[in-house]
Amino acid sequence: MGVVTSHTVRVLDPLTDPRWSGLVERHPAASVFHSRGWLRALQKTYGYEPLAITTSTPIEPLTSALLFCVVRSWVTGNRVVSLPFTDHCEPLVENIEQLRALRTHLETLRRIQRWKYAEMRTSGAFLDAEEGLRECEVYRWHRLDLRPSLDALYKGFHKSCIRRRIHHAERQGLRYEEGRNESLVRSFYALIVLTRSRQHLPPQPFEWFQSLVSCMGKAVCIRMAFKGDRPVAGILTMNHGKKMYYKYGASDARLNNLGATPMLFWQAIQAAKSDGMEELDLGRSELENWGLIRFKEHWGAHSTRLTLWRSPADEVSPSLERLKVRLAKTACACVPNRMLVLAGRLMYRHVG
Image 1 (cartoon, rainbow, N blue to C red):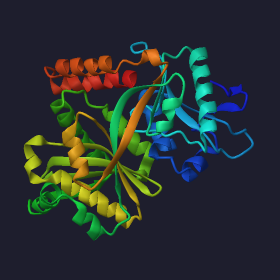
Image 2 (cartoon, rainbow, N blue to C red):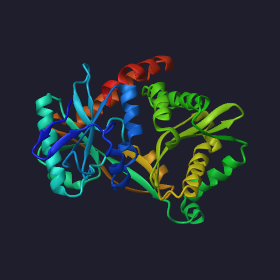
Image 3 (spheres, rainbow, N blue to C red):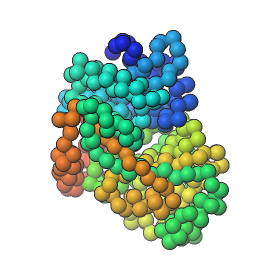
Protein backbone atom coordinates (compact mmCIF):
# COMPACT_ATOMS: atom_id res chain seq x y z
CA MET A 1 0.00 0.00 0.00
CA GLY A 2 1.36 3.42 -0.93
CA VAL A 3 1.18 6.63 1.05
CA VAL A 4 -2.44 7.72 1.56
CA THR A 5 -3.45 11.25 2.46
CA SER A 6 -6.75 12.13 4.10
CA HIS A 7 -6.81 15.73 5.32
CA THR A 8 -3.88 15.79 7.77
CA VAL A 9 -3.52 12.04 8.29
CA ARG A 10 -1.00 9.94 6.36
CA VAL A 11 0.07 6.31 6.19
CA LEU A 12 3.75 5.40 6.53
CA ASP A 13 5.92 2.30 6.65
CA PRO A 14 7.62 2.12 10.08
CA LEU A 15 10.28 -0.25 8.70
CA THR A 16 11.57 2.28 6.16
CA ASP A 17 10.54 5.73 7.38
CA PRO A 18 13.75 7.29 8.84
CA ARG A 19 11.73 9.14 11.50
CA TRP A 20 10.22 6.06 13.13
CA SER A 21 13.08 5.12 15.47
CA GLY A 22 13.24 8.68 16.80
CA LEU A 23 9.55 8.66 17.73
CA VAL A 24 9.86 5.27 19.46
CA GLU A 25 12.90 6.45 21.41
CA ARG A 26 11.38 9.67 22.73
CA HIS A 27 7.63 9.00 23.17
CA PRO A 28 6.81 8.03 26.79
CA ALA A 29 4.15 5.50 25.72
CA ALA A 30 6.42 3.68 23.25
CA SER A 31 7.44 0.12 24.07
CA VAL A 32 9.56 -2.68 22.66
CA PHE A 33 6.49 -3.68 20.64
CA HIS A 34 6.79 -0.45 18.63
CA SER A 35 10.41 -1.23 17.74
CA ARG A 36 11.53 -2.18 14.26
CA GLY A 37 13.02 -5.42 15.56
CA TRP A 38 9.66 -6.66 16.84
CA LEU A 39 7.91 -5.54 13.64
CA ARG A 40 10.49 -7.25 11.43
CA ALA A 41 10.07 -10.48 13.41
CA LEU A 42 6.28 -10.35 12.88
CA GLN A 43 6.78 -9.73 9.16
CA LYS A 44 9.49 -12.36 8.72
CA THR A 45 7.63 -15.15 10.53
CA TYR A 46 4.00 -14.49 9.70
CA GLY A 47 4.08 -12.21 6.66
CA TYR A 48 2.19 -9.39 8.39
CA GLU A 49 2.45 -5.92 6.82
CA PRO A 50 3.30 -3.24 9.43
CA LEU A 51 1.83 0.22 8.84
CA ALA A 52 1.37 3.38 10.86
CA ILE A 53 -0.82 6.44 10.46
CA THR A 54 0.27 9.89 11.60
CA THR A 55 -0.88 13.50 11.72
CA SER A 56 2.69 14.67 10.98
CA THR A 57 3.62 15.90 7.50
CA PRO A 58 6.38 14.08 5.57
CA ILE A 59 8.88 16.92 6.14
CA GLU A 60 8.56 17.24 9.92
CA PRO A 61 9.49 14.94 12.83
CA LEU A 62 6.83 12.43 13.85
CA THR A 63 4.76 13.56 16.82
CA SER A 64 1.97 11.00 16.57
CA ALA A 65 1.37 7.49 15.28
CA LEU A 66 -1.09 4.64 15.49
CA LEU A 67 0.77 1.42 14.67
CA PHE A 68 -0.86 -1.71 13.30
CA CYS A 69 -0.32 -4.77 11.11
CA VAL A 70 -2.49 -5.95 8.26
CA VAL A 71 -3.35 -9.62 8.82
CA ARG A 72 -4.43 -11.32 5.62
CA SER A 73 -5.99 -14.76 6.03
CA TRP A 74 -8.34 -16.85 3.92
CA VAL A 75 -9.23 -18.75 7.12
CA THR A 76 -10.05 -15.98 9.61
CA GLY A 77 -10.52 -13.01 7.29
CA ASN A 78 -8.46 -9.89 6.56
CA ARG A 79 -8.20 -7.43 9.43
CA VAL A 80 -5.98 -4.80 11.01
CA VAL A 81 -4.47 -5.44 14.45
CA SER A 82 -2.44 -3.22 16.77
CA LEU A 83 -0.46 -5.48 17.18
CA PRO A 84 -0.59 -9.26 16.62
CA PHE A 85 0.90 -11.43 19.41
CA THR A 86 1.59 -8.26 21.37
CA ASP A 87 0.57 -7.70 25.00
CA HIS A 88 -0.10 -4.00 24.44
CA CYS A 89 0.49 -1.31 21.82
CA GLU A 90 -0.36 2.16 23.03
CA PRO A 91 -1.23 4.94 20.54
CA LEU A 92 1.71 7.34 20.32
CA VAL A 93 -0.16 10.63 20.53
CA GLU A 94 0.13 13.98 22.30
CA ASN A 95 -3.58 14.58 22.90
CA ILE A 96 -7.07 13.16 22.39
CA GLU A 97 -7.59 15.22 19.22
CA GLN A 98 -4.70 13.46 17.50
CA LEU A 99 -6.07 10.09 18.56
CA ARG A 100 -9.53 10.87 17.22
CA ALA A 101 -8.11 11.95 13.88
CA LEU A 102 -6.07 8.75 13.62
CA ARG A 103 -8.99 6.55 14.68
CA THR A 104 -11.29 8.18 12.14
CA HIS A 105 -8.76 7.62 9.37
CA LEU A 106 -8.17 4.01 10.41
CA GLU A 107 -11.90 3.34 10.24
CA THR A 108 -12.00 4.91 6.76
CA LEU A 109 -9.13 2.67 5.66
CA ARG A 110 -10.89 -0.36 7.14
CA ARG A 111 -14.00 0.29 5.07
CA ILE A 112 -12.06 1.05 1.86
CA GLN A 113 -9.83 -2.02 2.20
CA ARG A 114 -12.78 -4.15 3.38
CA TRP A 115 -10.92 -5.34 6.45
CA LYS A 116 -13.18 -7.40 8.73
CA TYR A 117 -12.35 -5.34 11.82
CA ALA A 118 -9.74 -3.13 13.47
CA GLU A 119 -8.33 -4.17 16.84
CA MET A 120 -6.40 -2.16 19.46
CA ARG A 121 -4.70 -3.29 22.69
CA THR A 122 -4.26 -0.43 25.15
CA SER A 123 -4.72 0.64 28.77
CA GLY A 124 -6.20 3.97 27.63
CA ALA A 125 -9.63 4.35 29.22
CA PHE A 126 -10.28 7.39 26.99
CA LEU A 127 -10.97 5.02 24.10
CA ASP A 128 -14.29 4.18 25.73
CA ALA A 129 -15.71 7.39 24.30
CA GLU A 130 -14.56 6.61 20.76
CA GLU A 131 -17.52 5.91 18.49
CA GLY A 132 -17.62 2.41 17.01
CA LEU A 133 -15.18 0.79 19.47
CA ARG A 134 -16.25 -1.91 21.88
CA GLU A 135 -14.47 -3.99 24.50
CA CYS A 136 -13.64 -7.47 23.28
CA GLU A 137 -11.50 -8.73 26.18
CA VAL A 138 -10.10 -7.29 29.42
CA TYR A 139 -6.78 -8.31 31.01
CA ARG A 140 -4.54 -7.35 33.93
CA TRP A 141 -1.20 -5.76 32.99
CA HIS A 142 1.50 -6.12 35.66
CA ARG A 143 4.63 -4.00 36.03
CA LEU A 144 7.34 -3.99 38.69
CA ASP A 145 9.02 -0.71 39.64
CA LEU A 146 12.78 -1.35 39.62
CA ARG A 147 13.84 2.06 40.95
CA PRO A 148 14.15 0.95 44.62
CA SER A 149 17.41 -0.66 45.68
CA LEU A 150 18.01 -4.34 44.93
CA ASP A 151 17.75 -5.10 48.67
CA ALA A 152 14.42 -3.26 48.94
CA LEU A 153 13.09 -5.12 45.92
CA TYR A 154 14.10 -8.46 47.38
CA LYS A 155 12.42 -7.69 50.68
CA GLY A 156 9.24 -6.87 48.76
CA PHE A 157 9.02 -10.40 47.31
CA HIS A 158 6.60 -12.84 48.94
CA LYS A 159 8.57 -14.66 51.65
CA SER A 160 7.45 -18.23 51.06
CA CYS A 161 6.36 -18.15 47.41
CA ILE A 162 9.37 -16.25 46.03
CA ARG A 163 12.27 -15.71 48.44
CA ARG A 164 12.19 -19.23 49.90
CA ARG A 165 11.99 -20.75 46.42
CA ILE A 166 14.95 -18.69 45.21
CA HIS A 167 17.01 -20.00 48.17
CA HIS A 168 15.80 -23.52 47.46
CA ALA A 169 16.85 -23.29 43.79
CA GLU A 170 20.31 -22.06 44.77
CA ARG A 171 20.82 -25.28 46.77
CA GLN A 172 19.77 -27.62 43.92
CA GLY A 173 22.95 -27.37 41.87
CA LEU A 174 21.13 -25.91 38.88
CA ARG A 175 23.21 -24.68 35.97
CA TYR A 176 22.32 -21.19 34.72
CA GLU A 177 22.88 -20.00 31.15
CA GLU A 178 21.84 -16.87 29.33
CA GLY A 179 22.21 -15.61 25.79
CA ARG A 180 20.65 -16.08 22.38
CA ASN A 181 22.64 -18.82 20.64
CA GLU A 182 21.00 -21.62 18.65
CA SER A 183 21.47 -24.18 21.42
CA LEU A 184 19.65 -22.00 23.98
CA VAL A 185 16.84 -21.25 21.52
CA ARG A 186 16.32 -24.97 20.91
CA SER A 187 16.42 -25.83 24.62
CA PHE A 188 13.94 -23.06 25.36
CA TYR A 189 11.65 -24.17 22.56
CA ALA A 190 11.60 -27.74 23.87
CA LEU A 191 10.17 -26.34 27.11
CA ILE A 192 7.70 -24.16 25.17
CA VAL A 193 6.34 -27.32 23.52
CA LEU A 194 6.00 -29.05 26.90
CA THR A 195 4.28 -26.05 28.48
CA ARG A 196 1.84 -25.40 25.64
CA SER A 197 0.96 -29.08 25.50
CA ARG A 198 0.23 -28.98 29.23
CA GLN A 199 -2.06 -26.01 28.56
CA HIS A 200 -3.71 -27.87 25.64
CA LEU A 201 -2.53 -25.24 23.14
CA PRO A 202 -0.30 -25.43 20.03
CA PRO A 203 3.16 -23.91 20.54
CA GLN A 204 4.32 -20.91 18.58
CA PRO A 205 6.42 -21.89 15.53
CA PHE A 206 10.11 -22.44 16.24
CA GLU A 207 10.81 -19.91 13.48
CA TRP A 208 9.18 -17.18 15.60
CA PHE A 209 11.84 -17.47 18.29
CA GLN A 210 14.57 -17.62 15.65
CA SER A 211 13.16 -14.43 14.13
CA LEU A 212 13.09 -12.64 17.49
CA VAL A 213 16.76 -13.39 17.99
CA SER A 214 17.83 -12.50 14.45
CA CYS A 215 15.69 -9.34 14.19
CA MET A 216 16.13 -7.95 17.72
CA GLY A 217 19.70 -9.02 18.45
CA LYS A 218 21.03 -7.94 21.83
CA ALA A 219 17.60 -6.68 22.92
CA VAL A 220 16.59 -10.33 23.45
CA CYS A 221 17.87 -12.59 26.21
CA ILE A 222 16.97 -16.21 26.93
CA ARG A 223 17.65 -17.34 30.49
CA MET A 224 17.72 -21.08 31.14
CA ALA A 225 18.12 -23.36 34.14
CA PHE A 226 19.43 -26.90 33.66
CA LYS A 227 19.68 -29.90 35.98
CA GLY A 228 22.73 -31.54 34.48
CA ASP A 229 21.99 -31.38 30.76
CA ARG A 230 18.22 -31.42 31.22
CA PRO A 231 16.35 -28.13 30.63
CA VAL A 232 14.26 -27.27 33.70
CA ALA A 233 12.87 -23.78 33.03
CA GLY A 234 13.41 -20.80 30.78
CA ILE A 235 12.25 -17.22 30.28
CA LEU A 236 12.65 -14.83 27.35
CA THR A 237 13.01 -11.12 28.04
CA MET A 238 13.48 -8.06 25.83
CA ASN A 239 14.99 -4.67 26.60
CA HIS A 240 13.87 -1.28 25.32
CA GLY A 241 14.96 2.03 26.78
CA LYS A 242 14.70 1.85 30.57
CA LYS A 243 12.40 -1.18 30.59
CA MET A 244 12.82 -4.93 30.53
CA TYR A 245 9.91 -6.96 29.13
CA TYR A 246 9.12 -10.52 30.18
CA LYS A 247 7.44 -12.10 27.17
CA TYR A 248 7.67 -15.92 27.31
CA GLY A 249 8.22 -18.48 30.02
CA ALA A 250 8.23 -22.27 30.02
CA SER A 251 9.16 -25.15 32.30
CA ASP A 252 9.20 -28.90 32.75
CA ALA A 253 6.38 -29.33 35.27
CA ARG A 254 7.97 -32.52 36.60
CA LEU A 255 10.83 -30.40 37.96
CA ASN A 256 8.92 -27.33 39.15
CA ASN A 257 9.72 -28.27 42.74
CA LEU A 258 13.34 -27.16 42.14
CA GLY A 259 12.33 -23.48 42.10
CA ALA A 260 14.05 -22.72 38.80
CA THR A 261 11.52 -20.19 37.52
CA PRO A 262 11.77 -17.81 40.52
CA MET A 263 15.55 -18.09 40.27
CA LEU A 264 15.43 -17.04 36.61
CA PHE A 265 13.25 -14.01 37.35
CA TRP A 266 15.64 -13.01 40.12
CA GLN A 267 18.54 -13.27 37.68
CA ALA A 268 16.62 -11.08 35.22
CA ILE A 269 15.82 -8.47 37.88
CA GLN A 270 19.45 -8.28 38.98
CA ALA A 271 20.56 -7.87 35.36
CA ALA A 272 17.95 -5.17 34.79
CA LYS A 273 19.14 -3.24 37.85
CA SER A 274 22.76 -3.59 36.71
CA ASP A 275 21.82 -2.13 33.30
CA GLY A 276 19.98 0.82 34.84
CA MET A 277 16.47 -0.38 33.98
CA GLU A 278 13.59 1.26 35.85
CA GLU A 279 10.74 -1.15 35.17
CA LEU A 280 10.05 -4.83 34.54
CA ASP A 281 6.99 -5.28 32.35
CA LEU A 282 5.47 -8.65 33.27
CA GLY A 283 2.87 -8.56 30.52
CA ARG A 284 -0.82 -9.27 30.49
CA SER A 285 -2.81 -11.98 32.26
CA GLU A 286 -6.29 -13.29 31.58
CA LEU A 287 -8.68 -12.39 34.41
CA GLU A 288 -9.49 -16.07 34.94
CA ASN A 289 -5.82 -17.02 35.35
CA TRP A 290 -5.57 -16.36 39.09
CA GLY A 291 -2.45 -18.47 39.42
CA LEU A 292 -0.48 -16.29 37.01
CA ILE A 293 -1.88 -13.09 38.51
CA ARG A 294 -0.86 -14.17 42.04
CA PHE A 295 2.60 -15.16 40.81
CA LYS A 296 3.17 -11.67 39.40
CA GLU A 297 1.78 -9.99 42.51
CA HIS A 298 4.12 -12.06 44.71
CA TRP A 299 7.00 -10.13 43.11
CA GLY A 300 5.48 -6.86 44.24
CA ALA A 301 4.18 -5.94 40.78
CA HIS A 302 1.20 -3.62 40.41
CA SER A 303 -1.47 -4.06 37.76
CA THR A 304 -3.63 -1.89 35.56
CA ARG A 305 -6.57 -2.67 33.31
CA LEU A 306 -5.66 -3.59 29.73
CA THR A 307 -8.39 -3.68 27.12
CA LEU A 308 -8.65 -5.26 23.70
CA TRP A 309 -10.93 -3.05 21.58
CA ARG A 310 -12.57 -3.85 18.25
CA SER A 311 -14.36 -1.85 15.59
CA PRO A 312 -17.00 -2.16 14.27
CA ALA A 313 -18.85 -3.01 17.46
CA ASP A 314 -20.94 -5.76 15.86
CA GLU A 315 -17.75 -7.79 15.33
CA VAL A 316 -17.43 -8.23 19.09
CA SER A 317 -18.73 -11.29 20.93
CA PRO A 318 -16.62 -12.02 24.03
CA SER A 319 -18.66 -15.12 24.89
CA LEU A 320 -18.10 -16.54 21.40
CA GLU A 321 -14.36 -15.84 21.61
CA ARG A 322 -14.13 -17.68 24.93
CA LEU A 323 -16.13 -20.60 23.51
CA LYS A 324 -13.69 -20.88 20.59
CA VAL A 325 -10.75 -21.06 23.00
CA ARG A 326 -12.43 -23.74 25.14
CA LEU A 327 -13.26 -25.84 22.08
CA ALA A 328 -9.70 -25.48 20.77
CA LYS A 329 -8.24 -26.60 24.12
CA THR A 330 -10.57 -29.59 24.23
CA ALA A 331 -9.49 -30.64 20.75
CA CYS A 332 -5.78 -30.13 21.49
CA ALA A 333 -5.94 -32.17 24.71
CA CYS A 334 -6.00 -35.38 22.65
CA VAL A 335 -3.30 -34.43 20.12
CA PRO A 336 0.34 -35.67 20.37
CA ASN A 337 3.05 -33.03 20.81
CA ARG A 338 4.42 -33.45 17.29
CA MET A 339 0.98 -32.75 15.85
CA LEU A 340 0.57 -29.69 18.10
CA VAL A 341 3.89 -28.34 16.77
CA LEU A 342 2.67 -28.81 13.20
CA ALA A 343 -0.67 -27.19 14.04
CA GLY A 344 1.16 -24.19 15.50
CA ARG A 345 3.24 -23.73 12.35
CA LEU A 346 0.11 -23.84 10.20
CA MET A 347 -2.35 -21.81 12.26
CA TYR A 348 -0.52 -18.98 14.04
CA ARG A 349 -0.31 -16.70 11.02
CA HIS A 350 -4.12 -16.88 10.81
CA VAL A 351 -4.84 -15.98 14.46
CA GLY A 352 -2.63 -12.93 15.10
